[in-house]
Image (cartoon, rainbow over all chains, first blue to last red; front, side, top):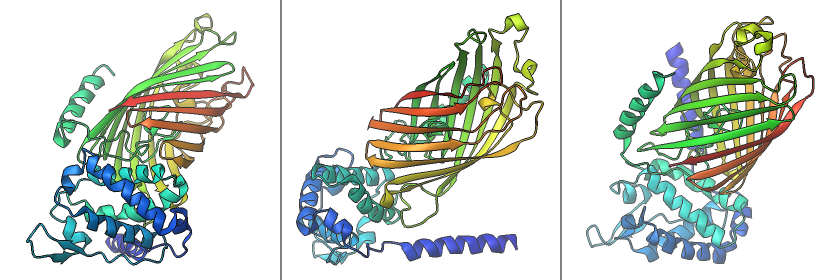
Length: 157
Length: 293
């Protein structure tokens, strides 16, 4: 009985976390707070050079097509923030086999040996990029709230 | 305590080596908390479920703190260190010194050592933003009162002569902490089983009660930005001593994190009256600095 109730509790936890996972905001307040599509583009334009200059993580992105990554990030931030965008989640891979396999978020990251420290460093760079674009902290934190759970998929080490 | 310190250092050394040689400073700014008044990672007066320092699960972190709380008639100084290993285990050591400044207690001086162990048992306060599950940790604080100075004229040199049953004791606690980025809030609830009088500075147990009592503590902080938090805390305490009409304490604080190597916390703290011989409500400024790697 005790075993059963623990399983039920775990099941409930899992169900609740799955049910809540990665749902964009229903209203567009965060999207507007980020400055809409223009604001998000500026944030990503600040963010990517920060990442590429960050000694903690820059090597991870050495082989990436950063223009494509930037476009995907804009879609994703816009969608999570409740904006009128759709994150396609498809990365055309030009370095692994040269023929352009299309991969999703999980398979892109699965062999990258990303640690928690690297995931957090990337998030910190995003926070700094939002600060530099005068995004109010309470708005920036709303976007972080949507991105932080991706740690489960991205951190594989 | 003399034997505990080398043992602790040895344990830290192998725990640290097991994780990684160098600290990775990999956690988000402020998510190691600050050093609470008994040396554990937390707020000002309450231990939290967060593991002190900035080491992730692949690494470790360490810090030292110095805290001074000055009320109208008393001062409390605390210094110590804490180590967080693999974002799982926290070991802390603190030395408290409580002094009086108003006659006839102007020479009063009570010292106490506190050794803390905390283990994270579930959850992730920072990343699991799509779930209500908080980070949960279990902790133990071993406290050893080193005696009472300045009351020699009364023949008092040990807290037992003030009515305490013991001059050492254990606090056991469970803490649940959640950062809600969507609301820019940090919430914490701690339940502590304790017999300590004024955290142990006046000993453990007494003429009014000697059993472990469960005491709730709560903290709440608004994350103004990445580097600044404003908050308040409330901590219930038992009332075991006839000579000490012990009350709950509470504080309002501002914590500033200019970097992961340094933080400053300032608070206004309300402690209640400490002894029936001085019925004045004690309140004052709490200042704490933490430096770490």
